[in-house]
Image 1 (cartoon, rainbow, N blue to C red):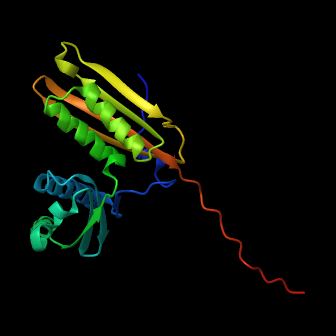
Image 2 (cartoon, helix red, strand yellow; image 1 turned 90 degrees about the horizontal axis):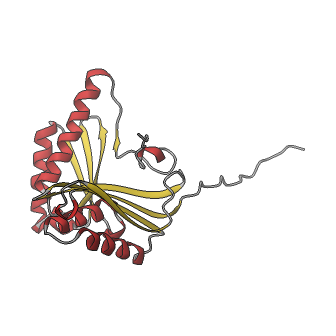
Length: 221
């Protein structure tokens, strides 16, 4: 059995930051962690068709800031902002604190691994061939400027009796390079034959460390 490291956790503090930013100890840590799970579950259940990629949570004294990254900000905001107001009220009731809710737009959804995986899963649920859906998503991502794409699907593909894995890839996908800007996402398709898992890696290039700017140093004579 091989040991696998999560591609995003592998790059934390090097080129990536945490999606949840706060500090707590003891019992409070556990309660806040479960509260984060409840916040994400509530947002995803309330807006299943909004194309939400990730939810960032940051905590301050008596305030919770939630940032929703979505490909369809109009659905999240709603007409005259009614949807986002209702969501803010439900989050305030859930946490018992004031909630600051922000909506950020994903301008290139074809380069977001979570949205690509969910798109493939949706096609599989509509009985579209898995190989066709995977190849189409891969080609679309490469057209949008990705330097490499890898997509894996596992389960009873095409209704086969035995579960198997299939994968397609194009370009470079350096999974062991920490400076590689590698976006990783998963999704599950619930089909009549069972659950099919989708994994997507999208390589967007390297993020090199910033060189420290030289400052003028005064030297006395």
